[in-house]
Amino acid sequence: MIQQYHDNLNFDTDKPILEMRDLCKSYFIGEGELKVLKDINLSITPGEYVAIMGPSGSGKSTLLNMIGCLDRPTTGEYLLGGAGVSTLDDDDLSSIRGARIGFIFQSFNLISQLNIIENIQVPMFYQGIPEYESAEKAIELAEMVGLGHRLKHRPTELSGGQQQRVAIARSLANDPLIILADEPTGNLDSSSGSEILDILHGLHDQGKTLIAVTHDEGIAKESERVIRLFDGMIDKEEYNQKRNER
Image (cartoon, rainbow, N blue to C red; front, side, top):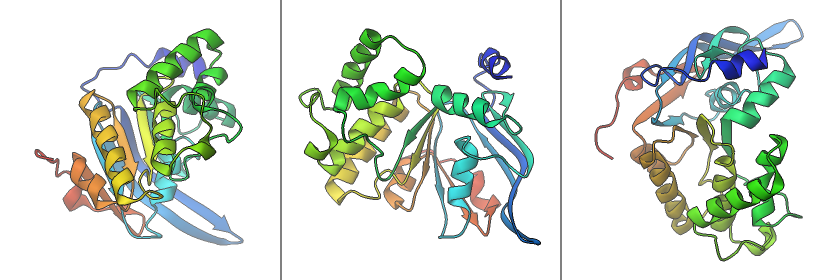
């Protein structure tokens, strides 16, 4: 199944890179059912910069898990790169996450024992890329986010903003279909957060597809489209409003 998924990655760029159709997610507690996502219909095209927002408990984290192939929907369909992933098993979902989704986390999720180069290399290691090749690419990515002078430093020797730069570089290591950012400025001061917004803006200008789950209105202003969740449902009125100016 995973090979079939990869064979389908040469999709028409005019078509959605990500599509959810009538997607629902429920959790069953005893005999009760907790509906967290309800009839989600979502389409994102290649190169879009989308912010997903909503109050606590609105379903943002669950939607992030669906988009990132960390969980499966209860009902409905999810297509990534034109291929259905809703019913794949854990191993196939893990393969897709590693090869096709770049993650940026609020808490950075760097490995403290590894230096910058080694942290950026981690996704490439799991894809079987030779060490000399992954090291060369890791250096290139570190330089791209302005850390070419800190290559041998470990996370504890970096500021929060610098750690997030490493996380952004790591998210690009496998040239993912989408970059999924979970509160990327949440643990940063305003100055560092502004720098991270500039980097994300630059990635979007390069044609990367960015999806940010966030409370940060700064990200909302930078994005092309804001998708707001309320009680597990998408606000339809705002969903189709694509921003022409940022």
